Image: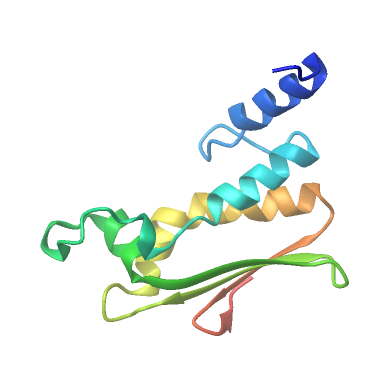
Length: 126
């Protein structure tokens, strides 16, 4: 690959530390990976479109009609703005499967010395 061993090690460390059960931000790269990975929720992720066979993950992902991750340098914050169709699932279902990911994103932002803001259906929750 031609990549320096130090750089490869940092990337491997970031990948190894982004699991929500055991990981945490250990570098700027790992914090950025966590924020990107844990905010990946959207109906495009659902391969099977048969709603009768959806599990909670499919239902939540399918219910998210818009997801935007924005970095506001001026205010030093990262904003995850979601639109969730409540006819498909309640917002509470999102938190049932995404609470660990949301908290991990909050701590990753804190590692970067910025604020993590979560907005769902135009309501600021964090």
